[in-house]
Image (cartoon, rainbow, N blue to C red; front, side):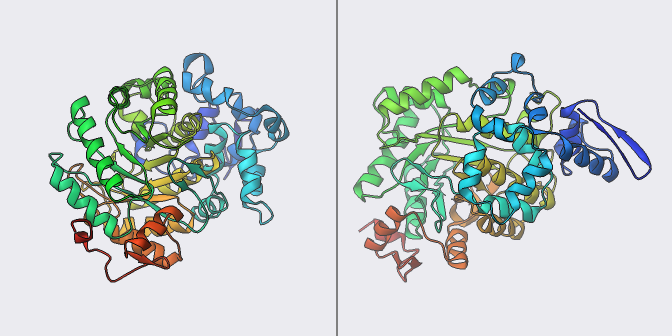
Length: 454
């Protein structure tokens, strides 16, 4: 295995595959903070050159955390489809990139080979791509999943209605819920981030959402994003659960910091498959985001993009209905500015799609980051061109509970109109019956939350 190259009259040598992956990454403040980034553009280009010549077999045999030290590594490796892998293992990373981008390669081709790729392989090919490459590669892939409705179809752009409230106030939640639905938002999921994630509060919030959905016969899914252990206890007490949610990391230690493990996720998956009120079979919802492992000192010296790819390797084991990266939420320590957030959003979306996931993005930022609402609208536009499955829908794009900025109800409607996209089919039929949509377009009644008070 060759880990050195000569470039610009200088020889560049790298310690191991993990070092090559880290230094081949585009500039990220998190990698700089961790002391693993390339020193300059020359070293970054040299690392990309070395990475491009590595074979897929060399990447599989050298995960950033050895199998004997990390359960996420073991799970990703065990899930590889061996017959497909054997047809690919002698490819270089450069050859994989060319295959993904060539005109003759379809989404069906990519969906097939994805089962033979480890997360490190997927991360590696993303590092060799330009932003436009990431858009083109992701746009080819459609990954379908079904809970109560089906997500991931070509021609659709779905949305999570996020009716958060700073005190979990019932009337505040319902006000946001009514307004979002009146703009045709909420087909991916109606998902509440609770302030109080105790078992009684979680059950109460689930019942509020479920009662509203049943009263108005809305074809969607509900979720209260408490810790998964709390949701499981609520489900065992008979709470109306459709999806079980959890934030996940790309390392065992990172998941320990989140209070989860493979055993807990296995238990949750088995429980939800038996007790969830959704039709399924896809009944899990995961959120990720570059930098989470570093923030909990659980990155093992690996770069944040590669660890993010490993999140998707973990997620696909559970056949989720939804996965999204909360791309700008952690802050400038990990993604410093607009350029880094845009790059990370495109990387995450591509890697999730190539991992076989129905991938969404929370195109967002915090107020101490060098970004603004125009930047996030630009990112959402690029991601829509890339075939993103869903975005967040938040009142005026301002989450008053989590204190961050994201995409608004109006943004989703605008992106659908701009790209001639529609909500999920079952939801569109319902929205038309309510007079909110007509032939996929908002009507004059759209935005009138009073529709749901009469």
